Image (cartoon, rainbow, N blue to C red):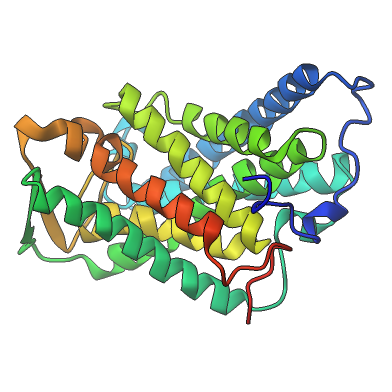
Length: 316
C-alpha cells in the first residue's frame, strides 16, 4: 500500500497539527488523534440532535401537532430533517481543521477543479459497487428482489436524496478529510487508514443489529473510502460514493441502512433467513459477506487502478 497510496500534494500542505502535543511517540499521537476525533464527532452529534429536534418541533408546531420527541422521530418527514441537519458535522470538522489545526481548505479535499465530474464518477461507482453486492446476494439465493407497488411520495423521496448527499459528505469529512489527513501527518499511511476506518466503524456500534461481521465490513468501507480519498485528493468523489451507497441501499433496494431506516423505496429486497451470513440479516446487507467481497475487490482495484496518478490527481 505504501508504494501505491501516498498523500496527495494538496493534502501534504496541511501544517503540523500537534502544537499542543510535544511528543514523538507514535502511540501517544494515535491516542491523541482518536480523542480529537471523538471530541469532534460527539460535539457534532449533540449539535445535530439539537438542530434536528428543534426543526422537527417547529414543523410540528406549525402543523398544530403536539407530539413527543419520540413521536416526532417516527414521522416519515423526520428522516430528511435528520439527514440534512448532519451538515453540522461537516461545518464543525472544517472549522476545527482551519482554526485549530491551521489547515487550508484544500487539505480537507475541497478542491475546485472538476467537482461535478468527480461527483458524477462517485455516483456511478457507488451505485455499481452496492448493486454488485445485491447481485451476489441474489445469485447465492440469500436475497430476492421485487418491485415495490406502494405509492411513492415523490417530495419525500427527493428530500431524502438531498439528505443522503449531506449525510454521506458529513461522515467523509469527519473521518477522511479531518481524521485521516490529521493522522497521516505523523503516522504511516496504512496505520492512519486503519485507525480512521476503525473510528468510522465505531460510530455505528450503537446501531440496531450490529454484529462482528458488520463491524468488519464498516471498517472495510472505511479503508476503501480512505484509499479512494488518498488516490484522488478530493472529497467530492468519495462523498458521492458514500451517499449513493446509502441511497441505493435504502431507497432503491429497500434494505436497512446500517441497521437503520430506509424510507420510501423503489424495490423491495427480501432476505433468506437461512443465509444471514451472506445477506447480513437484521443489520442489512452491510452485515454480510456479499458486501465484504465487493469492498475487498473495490479496495484492491482502487489501489492498483492504473489510470489514477500516484500524486492523487485523477488522470484527465
